[in-house]
Length: 301
Image (cartoon, rainbow, N blue to C red; front, side):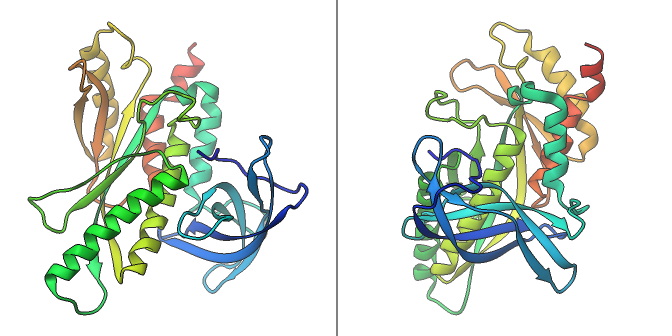
């Protein structure tokens, strides 16, 4: 699995292709593609050599794309990458709608212990047809698209958890990214708020690429977020009091909460917050993180 990191500079060993992706002020995915140099990371594995890229937006003028994370692009021959970016203005100041930067700041405020708050996202979606097709052929294309997306997420190193097509809703699909409970050597990136939000954005982009190849387009539906604190995972801890406190903290976030049981122990280990829109994951993760872990609790220690 690739580590989420950015290689800047270094000795080039070849060339590759990269899709630079970012969210605009409406939360929509944007992409620009370019050829890049390929270097080596600290382990000697191939890694992209990327730096800031200045682009001109018809709405916002000159913008600076600041690479922050990357993963391999399994939809192209190696070496190809998806490079996730934050957006700044010409003054090198983050745009107000660059919500990833706000989440990053909240993580920094909480230090390394922010890694102890685990996150997961369940992204619901529908696959819409582009052009006319027989219904059975259309269903087959949707199934193959969902299957190809699962494989692409896994090959890219995304913290892919599961996927489901609800038989009660013929158009309803979902996939989950985030905490999986695997050993650390298999999941080297902690399922914290920033990592899992990044993985959801890259997973969405992979779906758009895979679906386009099948003549389909994803229509993003609601997203649910799961959050688990160290206190909830403490063996033998009194769960009800912790859960009730978390539910009280999450209640103002305009969503429905439910307790998610652990499959083997039968006790609750996380809270799920349901939202009725395809929210920007950075906004949602920021709101949840700051609700369950307010800064005043840090200052009191």
